[in-house]
Each structure stands twice: as structure tokens, then as C-alpha cells.
Amino acid sequence: MPHPKDFVVLPKIDIIFKKFFSAESNINLLKDLISSALVVSPDSIEDLQIMNSSLFPKHLNEKFCHVDLMLQLDGKIIDIEMQVHNTGEYRNLSVYYGAGAYFGTIDKGDGYQNPDQVIVLSFLAYDEFPLSEGYKSQFGLLELTRHELLTDKLQFIYFEINKIPETTDERIGLWLRFLKAETQAELDEIIKIGDNIMAQAVSTIRQMDEDNLFREKARERRLSMADERFALSHAFTEGERKGEIKGKIEGKAIGAHENAIETAKKMLQRNFPVDSIKEMTNLDTA
Image (cartoon, rainbow, N blue to C red; front, side, top):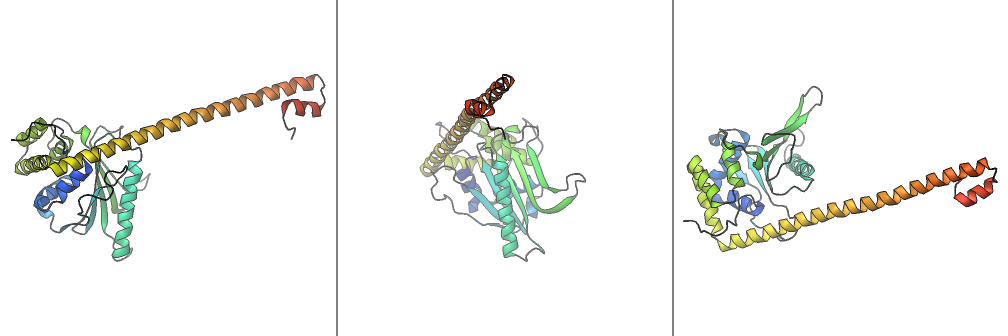
């Protein structure tokens, strides 16, 4: 029986996500996640290698620590990202990650002739695309008017886990429910509607939740992510405040200038000397 205490080791916490899917004993779970995301058969995945399997990066408790899972899969590079909070810049970051991986394939492979395809899979625990009601958004490099594909070598797929409907026939829906889960009851529900693969996923995350090391690391990471959110919120508020002050200063300056012009006009109408007008209003006749 799982412990009745709070569920700390959430699968959507990036370091837990990486540990969960990079474990050798969970390679079948990783294959199932990828095949579900790419809509291919798990049996079609033959050569799967994890390129950065180190568990906890240095300075884990620092703000804006980046944790990802980079894979080499049947001639493709798959960069899997788990993003919990909206930083306001993730779209650009994901493009940066994809471009960096693509550059690396050109550098290590056959140059520009046959680079590996790079796919960035992003799982987002917030709404990144408010204009879309669907939970999946897929982007490539297309001509803007004809929608002609420039190349399929760089793709970006985003899954917004909060948009998953109550019922869906798509396999990825089960994984999104799993990543979204924050209570034992939600994990129980996944077992009911899932299969042996999802039962293994739930059992594994519960075992991790009972491990003091992972609980401690999960708490540390959640605190650092809370710090990130506070820092971003503070920066945004400070930026608004500075913008408001600057606007007031500029507004006052514009108002003073306009008043000086009106004063100069009146002085001209009364035949004041130009030098006197310039001295009184600080205006330049040029």
C-alpha cells in the first residue's frame, strides 16, 4: 500500500521525470512514451540510446537549472523537455535547444548532406498556446503562404498536460494523465483505465515516492522552482514599475515642452524679442 502522506515525488518535476524515464529498468516505459508522442508502434523503435543519463545536475537547488533527456533513436535525435512553470520564454528556449542539437548533428555527422532529424518533445504543465483547445501542437519549417515544407529535419511537438480531456482514445492521453497526477487517487484512476505498462509506471513512481533521497531531491527542486517563479514575477513587477515611472517622467517632459511652446506663441503675439523667449522657455528656435 502506498503511504498515506503527501505525494511528493511528482512525475512532472523535471529531475524526477528524467530519473524515471532514464532508468534502465524503465526503458520499455520510455519507448512507450516516445511511440505515443510520435504515433508510431513501440516495436518499431529498435536502437534507443540515452545520451545524457546523469541523474542530478550540478547546482540543482539553484534557480533556472536546466534538466532534459537527450536520446538517439533510429537515426533521430529526440530532446525531451518537462516544463512545469510558464517562464514567458519557453518557445524561444525550445527552438534554441532544437537548433543546438541540429548543429551538433551536422558537426558530428556527414555535414549538410544528411543530418539527423531533431525532434524536441516538450511536456508542459501550463497553457502555452491559449488560442488552441487541443493538447498537442506540432511545428515544422514551412513556407508561410504555400505551406511548403522546407525540411523535416527540425520539428517541435508540445503537449499541454492541463488540456487533456476526461476521455481520449489516444495512447499519449494516458501518459499526460500520469504526468499531471498529484494525488494517489489520480494514480489509482490511471491503473483502472490503463494497462500493464501504466500499472508499471504507477508502481515505479510510488516506489520513488517512498525513497527518502528522491523525496528530498523533489522537495529541493520544487523549492528552487518556486524561487524561479518568484524571481520571474518580481522581475515582471519591477519592469512594470520602472516602465510606469519612466512613462510618468516622459509624460511630464512632453507636457512641459508643450506648455513652453504655448508660452512662446503667446510671447511672440505680444512682440517679445526672440532672445527673451528662448531664455524664458528654454526652447531652441532651430
